[in-house]
Picture 1 (cartoon, rainbow, N blue to C red):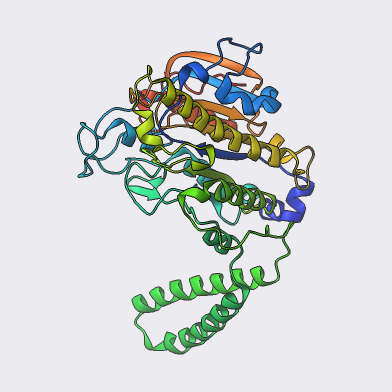
Picture 2: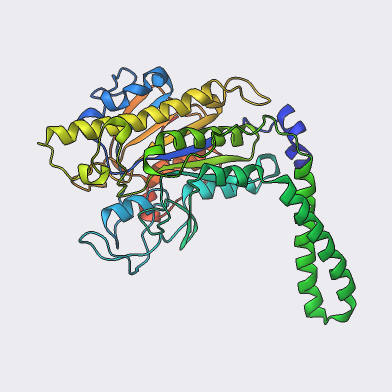
Amino acid sequence: MPFLMGLPSLGEAAPTRPRQRLIVMFSPNGTIPKHYWPDQRGADFALKPILKPLEPFRDQLLVLKGVHNSVRGDGDSHMRGMSCLLTGIELFPGNIQGGSHTPAGWAKGISIDQEIKNFLQSQAATRTRFGALEFGVGVSDRADPWTRMSYAGPNQPVAPTDDPYLMYQKLYGNLRDKAALQSVLGTLQEDFKKLGDRLSPADRALLEQNAKFVAELDAELAADQGKKYRTQPPALESGVANQNDNLPELSRMQMELLINSFVNDFARVATLQFTKSVGGARMNWLDIKDNHHSLSHEPDKNATAVDKLTRINTWFAGELAHLAKRLSETPEPGGTGSMLDHTTIVWTNELGKGNSHTLNDIPFVLLGGGLGFQTGRSLQFKGVPHNRLLLSLAHAFGHKLETFGNPTLSKGGPLALS
């Protein structure tokens, strides 16, 4: 019965629980608090300039102030802000030097997106082709604790794919290449049969393991050849180079791929990472020529820098609003309402404020109805570790973890958001 209920046609007709999805969206270098945090608490709150693009979704918002990244240890604030953001645990000692703090390595634990993915993949009814997908926009090829927020486990950073054409290939592949690979796999299986009787028991066992893997891959490719998607892949504009000035176009391309992957139930967890911690994009499309990270170091008295940073963060809010709009106008496959009703987007940052490098008051905005939280509110907490928010995300999926990340930072359990 669990296997049968996991089949798409039956699973849509009688799901064991409503389909739920999570997107974590990241933008770097902190925010401008006076233009970000609502003054009011509860349901009666007004959005400040940075969050103003989210006004159409005000009733589906949760603005959380007073949530701190309390993870300490090795690494500078940008490193810990990024690599501890979704893991909630310290970095390993390492040789990557940053700022004036101690050098560090990768995070010591799994990130919450991957933890939830593993939980969903362990059940037939919620298992999908990929489980989770990691999208990037202008991340760059550099690999260090400033650039990775997803971790498959201790010392196992997961790289986002920031080229939409590569992501397209990952999602939909090339049928001609798949047909050629199937031919090779078929030959391999014949060779395995011929070798079987000539090998020792230990070698035969190893061969059988490989033969099983090849057979499974062959079956997966065969199934994929005739696959009919719920909706066809989006038509991407061709020739958009993966470079700074194209970030707006790249962002929208990645969003279309993300939404399409959800419609086709390729995954129920995704991350969307804009640049990286210490991200130095130049927002020329906003007529801002300065490096984003350099601007974030300017003092509060620099009114010009504050204005530019406000416009940069407002642009990120606008990208979130566009993603929410596209989800809201996409019907939930096989269900009721829109995809936004079944998806929660978490927009966050590695710092609370750029020029102080504080890990207090990390910007957390939740949007959408996927996790059943009571939205349409601005909440003020008293300096709670963000591990408790990560626990809340897991619990909303039915994954009743007692702690996540550093256990001492999970005291008090999940935040009361429902």
